[in-house]
Length: 318
Ligand code: UDP
Ligand code: MG
Image (cartoon, rainbow, N blue to C red; front, side, top):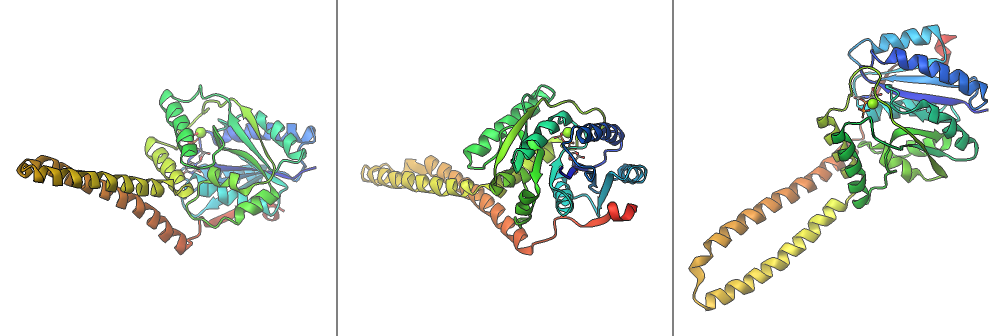
């Protein structure tokens, strides 16, 4: 039987965590009974530097029931880093880890199918949303548009898959090999390879608490995904530059002809316009190139992605 770690990043989740813990406890027992998980399985809650009572709740859970474990990050590092901290902690103990959000918007009953597929030999099982009825219209369209845009940009994403997935130990070992600082897990995981499959589920509404992804964070996350996965924007700049160069040759021929016809003074408007246009394009291009240089800069520093402050694991509870 398989030792499974359920990895859950939590940031200011005091409202929802008690509900989540209860549901997970029930699910755990059910999975244990159906023989899909071993008794050594654990629920690993990662506190991503919460400012509310999240860590107290996690410690209490751990004290009462040693199946709950906690990892406390030294400060808020964002969803992706918190998730990675959890997965990398789980890696040395588990046969596979399932990552899910603290608000249980992702149907925990899809885990049976995930574990079944794992037993059948899959290394990565992606949870895929079958619908987005519970999302706001705005979120639905922006998110789906984003997946399409990303695949157009050459990023390999699993359509409508967030961070609800099962990864085997060797897939986690593979993930650990990716040394990048700009972390966009759902773009990196498909690069690991191995046999994978999907499980579909309907996404629910948050039972309590607020979404930790306001528009600003969503945009930052989307941008992060694009620039950390794809270099196609740079290539597009090259193409754009080539096109503009061709146009300028046309303009040169045109202005020579106009000059020969004796009508040079009338060119002022088009001249002024093109200066602005070229200037604008150059700035845009430099900006995007700068974005990548910024990333290179960050990567070369190889900062740690997270620092664990406390770990409430098995050894401590004994
Ligand atoms: N989260 C985190 N650190 C952050 C922001 C979010 O660990 O800085 C966690 C959060 O606690 C939740 C998950 O990431 O478990 C997804 O967040 P949320 O449910 O707010 O996002 P949404 O479902 O609205 O996209
Ligand atoms: Mg959520």
